[in-house]
Amino acid sequence: MKALLFPGQGSQFVGMARDLHERFPEARHVLDEADRVLGFPLTRLMFEGPEDVLRETHNAQPAILAHSMAIWAVVRPVLRGARWMAAGHSLGEYSAYAAAETFTVTDAVRVVRRRGELMHAAGVARPGTMAAVLGCDLEVVEEVCGSTAGLVVPANINSPAQVVISGEREAVAAASEALRARDARKVVGLSVSGAFHSPLMSSAAEGLREVLAGVGMADAASPVYANATAQPVLEAGVIRASLAQQLLRPVLWDATMRRMIGLGATEFYEIGPGQILKGLLRSIDRNLPCRTLGTAEEVQTFLEEQWAGGEGDSPTVRGADPESTALPGGQEHGELRG
Image (cartoon, rainbow, N blue to C red; front, side):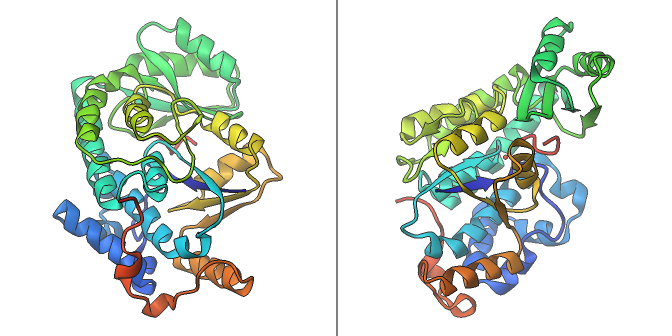
């Protein structure tokens, strides 16, 4: 079975999706629609930067989602009829639900823009930070976090060799030193605007609940694995609650990948900018293939291979009517943090 993986914050870069915008009408329509929905030229920021502005949480999140959904608009026809499951890392979970037709891409763009604003505001109100811990057992990380004064918790359990911790600045600094003393291979502070996936995000989670309550959502057309539980979800009500919980709870990425593998996932595709999720999957199971679909060249090669094998629909990519595949959707590693 195919497994679609959608990246989260940290995978953005200046120049992202420019080649997709130029080559594929379907992708261009999604990206231009994101500009229209947000009321400012997000694509200019994606294509030209500056990098520090693109990196800001409220800009990076809609940019990454728009990039992923632009690719999905192009590859969706060749996957029509195939059975697939999906997961997204933090922010990427929204991309996964948009692909599964839980909500429209236009709604998803609006929601993640607001999500980023709420997360930034929560970081200002209750300052915090994050650090990536490499080469240290999860049990040791949990023990150190539990015994450190102040608030610090595991926030992203990404792979057997990588856990991200989050919390108050002094507590994260103290835990980082303690983990180095416990022979963690490396502990790296992250440049973030807040302590994501921790109790310090409580105000953002409450605001997000209100935002999600006002968005139309349908049951997922394919199973999406929730970050907060590593369980597949389909029901709109469960999805709505899970997305709000996600800001306060750790991203269970390692457990999610293992559960997908256990339930029959054999072909993985990272849909969006970068190759971070491919790297994480490799650290979990080196034998599983993961294909990246992030650039126009990667997407074009994938389409040609699928059509040559007689799979899926084969529209004329460069001349297709963008309205025909306009917006997929129904009637978020140490760098991966939000």
